[in-house]
Structure formats: structure tokens, C-alpha cells
Length: 46
Image (cartoon, rainbow, N blue to C red; front, side, top):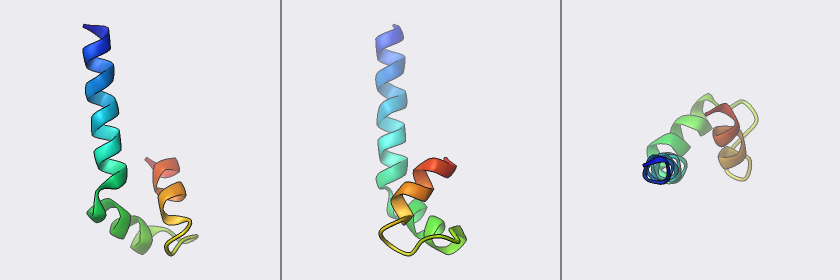
């Protein structure tokens, strides 16, 4: 059961990081980052 929970959390995190709405929101809210730093700052803030 621990493995299943870990897998679900991992999938949700991947979807959140890869989802365009989150990337756009990060670009708008992110002070440091346009496109190259968007993913890093987004994942760091999440």
C-alpha cells in the first residue's frame, strides 16, 4: 500500500509540474522566470 500511495503522489506531482496552466501561472507569478527558469522556480515553490 505504501508503494501505491507513493506512485499516486509521484504521478500527481509530474502532472502538476508538466501541466501548462501551472507553468503559465508560474510565469505570471514567478519573478525570476520567463521560460527557462519557469520549471525550476515552479517546482521549488510547489
